[in-house]
Image (tube, rainbow, N blue to C red; front, side):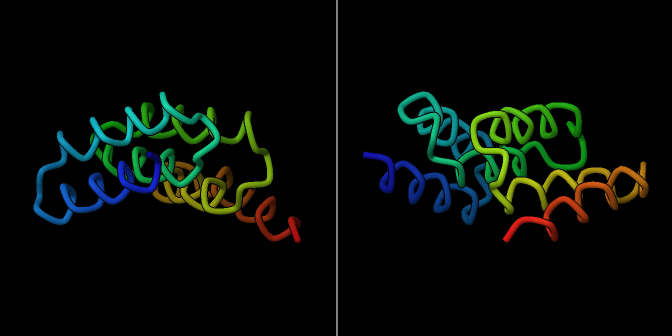
Length: 98
């Protein structure tokens, strides 16, 4: 049941258990690849230390749903420090979607 898996992931993250939160997100994505908020949370769990993996998760989400704004915003945020031009590209993309 997807909402329960997302709730378990959120609870684990709030407790500081990043690994368990990631496991629940991965299970959720495997159970329902169209549960897009799980991709965003999974990318957040990768954090600053694993930006390439976070970006890949978000790009996977966007291949399924190109107009999912939270994923576009999150992807822009992964580029904010290292490549401001790329971040601006994704910000503009998000703005263009109604």
